[in-house]
Length: 154
Image (cartoon, rainbow, N blue to C red):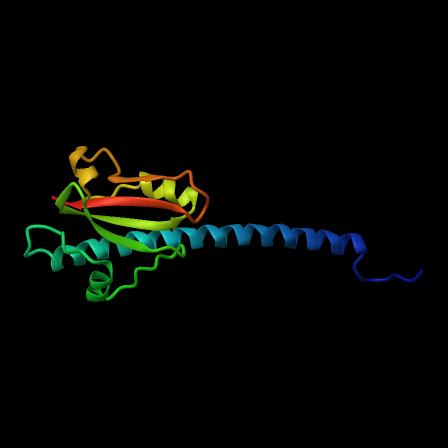
């Protein structure tokens, strides 16, 4: 009797199946981490914009002179966000002592996340006694077309 050593086809298929399951799990984990990174980047960039706009317009009584290209040039940031959309800064039409940060180009799930996220220092958050998120937006547009707005100021 000759004893052969080696792997059978069934053993090889088992190994490949296990490797496939591990790969699918890794891809899901990487996708989740990338999405979390995008959300953190948006949060950091919005906070940086708000701080810079307050410094630029701190000596004035209102934000009526906000101009996207001028402000983004002055604060040294791009108006592009990680979702392929843009940030926009505008004065609140009903109160020139307030400005609005808009986050454009969001997916539905990211829009819902940013609408429910607590934006401390925003008008809605402060007026609600720190119980509302401070953001508004309609998240039922197709992916890439949703907008979240956060109002800051007095």
